[in-house]
Length: 324
Image 1: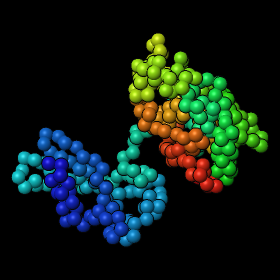
Image 2: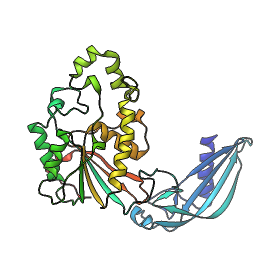
Image 3: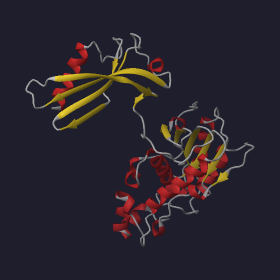
Image 4: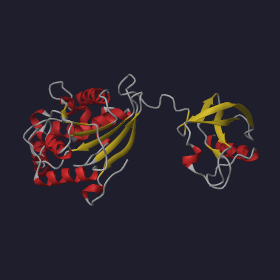
């Protein structure tokens, strides 16, 4: 039924001179809602009549709110010819280019913040245990290698055109050393947060991955394949990390300033990114961040986050500098 109704939507809109092409016509058609009740499928559609013949997304959605006309199309599977009824609705609003955008994100702060923020997250450079293939966790024994220092310098150069109000870092040595390279020459002191520490992985820390797999096959397999359910004596490191990430976001976003730099570790970065996007700990391995990888969030005054860039690494292979 859905496929037939979509054809009906197309025919109805064509009859009413609503066009779906972005480039050749004066109208932009976006089906935004469909609802099935008792075999009846209803579509609510905004139509834009103020676009130029050549579609320009910046001009089309340049204003925060654009008034549009809407059309409701209803069809039923009880009729062999799928007869349709249409109904004009009152003007609707399109905010930021997205129709009916309410409750699409959640607040990281649960209250208004002083100003919108731009947050740049950087993973530390290559560490000694990265290089040796060991499980790191929250251990202080893994330190930045010579290659890791060079990666940190590349990050510093890549971000040289940007001005940061504050830099927050994990106090664990491999992240701390990376942050010190990035923040060298700044007047403001580095801020070290325990909430940016890496997940504690108990007896796996310091073990080579190959040895951990052989010695603790069940625990290691769970850590690798089902990390949200990896636990030691009832303690779930990844689930705990989600709570830690939320604490970190609140502490950082409630700090005065508009442009922040964060330097930390892969697992807590995964948690920071996922919590900002509303993803649970079961999505832990859906995100990856390389050594020296850079990610960027924009946060509005409600504390809602939009991911702008994820794991940028062009600067690792060239003299690329970022401007955003």
